[in-house]
Length: 386
Image (cartoon, rainbow, N blue to C red):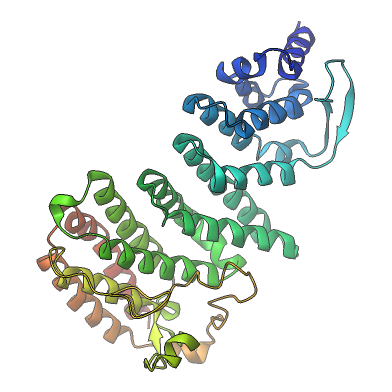
């Protein structure tokens, strides 16, 4: 009986004369992969081809159908991790022809990135972003438990993170909100992220801080801020604070130099040492001390936004030749001893008090208060330990 069911699905998914494949995807038959049915892997390539045809067709504008097709791609990301290589039916013919399938992950990843970057449907793009989170988590988990990992895997991880960070800046607020939510969800595996590469959490923090300052520069008056834009600002603050409390305090307070030759050529003094924690609270202080009704400041130059003491941390990611935070390294014991926790605690107290008392939007104030205790707990724990 099960074999006949698979045969019927194979015929429907590979039939080019009628839109049977769209109806199969619409009816959510892709759920069969989650039931661990014997031989369900035979239909993997059929479903991938059907979903790809739907997503690649500009004539299909049904948002629900496109989102369902993207969910098929996302649901299959972890399939091969559980079953390894498997046999599948040949999707190029209606006949029952089985072939060996070595690796479907590159195919799924290419479709996933295409959905994130070029998908026209808002819902399908949000589903693709959730797929990036799945891809990040599975790869972080695999790499963190292995002593040896390929450069290809680390490149894929960095591309996933950079893509999520860039999607947090797009003009579609709903998609940007989803991207920030995915970044915040990654805090649950922050230890694995830090073990794989300690620069990744720092890149996320600095990008979120820059993005928050950029979003604030777009807010002119509270009356003109849409509810979605308010949610985006609040989510950005929440994700920024969540990632900040996940990083060891010695790393947060370790000085670094933001090297920007263009800024130096313009005569700006950017040579002083700054810390990641100072960047976060500089942005928060700027927001709480500048009203949305005030005159908007002009950026200091390309890649700079008002209120953020560093340039765009993703500026060099387009060419993938220069890693913007390569000066970061794991701190030595001697460097950690130089960190002044008491000074950091006082800085936190001053900025937090000013932020809570002067912030004009109640939603931001409540969100900041909810996470503030975590920040103080982190600093106090480090101070008591020392």
